[in-house]
Image 1 (cartoon, one colour):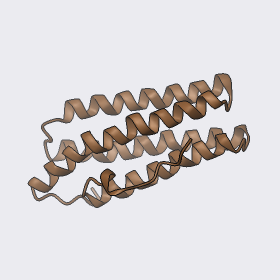
Image 2 (cartoon, one colour; image 1 turned 180 degrees about the horizontal axis):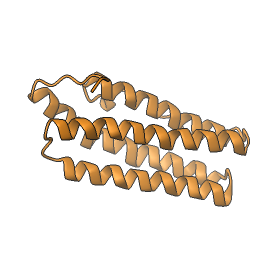
Image 3 (cartoon, rainbow, N blue to C red; image 1 turned 45 degrees about the horizontal axis):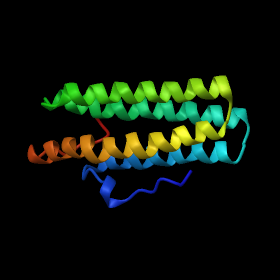
Image 4 (cartoon, rainbow, N blue to C red; image 1 turned 180 degrees about the vertical axis):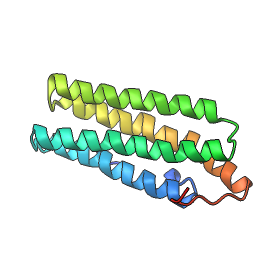
Length: 142
């Protein structure tokens, strides 16, 4: 798998969300590296578990702000979050059933490129535009 790099195309222009996305991408890369380097089941399981937990943390941040500021596309955005959580759960199940396979590494690569990047550049960018249009600057305290 090629490493997913942060770029301006992934910028939502909302520092709290952008910083969380950077961490998220790094953790996704860590999972891929652990699998490709055959770092062992414990390391891979820990990385996948952290990725799942961080995803929930990140989504809860976005969802709190969407609710607080009455984001009009919340329902669609929340559905996409649910879809991602399902995809991550499927990756974790695949690991538990099959181990650290080349197919799992490919699935993570597909997930990163096709879901995460698209979600950030299409869905989260709209959220950032909405917040800026309302003069809302997010903080990590809410």
